Length: 413
Image (cartoon, rainbow, N blue to C red; front, side, top):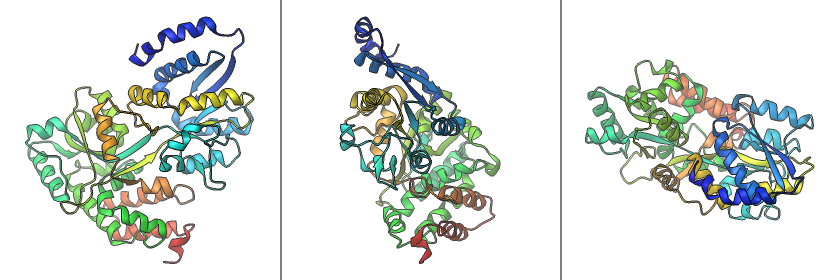
């Protein structure tokens, strides 16, 4: 039993004795099948504090979740409360009118959430929040602390530092980077996990204001440096899949891995002894601002058609509370966006510190609402670049052309 569960053992027992004969049942769906034990504990805590409500949990495999949820909601058979995605995937559900509108009036804690977190669960058409954000993810560079220490290497700050570290790792008989690009989505991770500092916040702001597009020298320079750094990826990396890349890093065969904060727990699940450090994308010149790329990856929503509105709102308020956010961070090793949450886990604390100098994970946050999505454009074209089938300049032009089909600022460039 975890400390979180022990804390509420007595409360749960007392609540159980005092529970009414006919408690109200609400259903709660999600896709985190690997987190069922933790969510069962969270629900036990809520039920201990609300003995008149029973929450029935159903977790569905992530690959099928969206289809099953959408079908159920359309058929008026959806859950009372549910996990929903963020950004474009969120809008596909929220735009159908299936979700309960949320505000500071019915969920007071929302007033303290970061604006970027709320944006991830806000429908652009009516500027209404429909879900409580539950986690942020950070794209960055992970490194094996023990390997670096054994070789006398410092975590790289500049591109030159990173190239020198990569050379040293290879001379020691290790892979410098574990990354492969066979899975298209990994190309987007590599682009912003390695390239954010070179692009810079000003580039992001210029793209969003329409003063720049992806032919901009800052984006092209980032891609050029990434392509150059790929010489330190494993031989045959263009055919190396994601799972194999993870294994190379987790087993200590590679010194660095470009990935998200979600990788830390995954890698430690593969190798509990691995000692992982996290750094921002390399900068061009010493003293430049090192950046990570951040996005929010889901939220908790209520069914607009629920017959148990008050019970669902009580549950959503619990999921927006600092009490829950702290348990979420402690038990699931994720960065909760709920204000006031602290991180006893040093890995999470390190990521939270990196998040203080960040830019949005651009394509997911801003360009996954229409087709072709920015993510697809980057993933497919950077994959071609890494295989030697496109230049950085061509990638920038193709991404810009694709987005110009619906992004008005690019139509005037």
